Image (cartoon, rainbow, N blue to C red):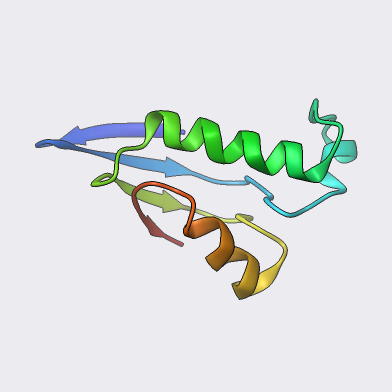
Amino acid sequence: MLFTIIGDKMIWVTSDHHMGHDNIRKYVKRPFETLKEMDDELVRRWNEVVGHDDDVYHLGDFTLGGVKWARHYFSQLKGKIYI
């Protein structure tokens, strides 16, 4: 993720999380045994650095699961997310 500071909040720019995409673990050799393990770790890492009031611009490939999966993950992530 790239970021900049504007006032009291951060503005983040990121892409290609591929949440809910089981095959991505094999394609790019992500070091996770299961899809749940990968998704849980991505959420944990995101929330470790993004604040509740931060803006996040996600430029693509957030999830392959469509709107249902996107809402599922958005509900777990800090920040105001723009896709």
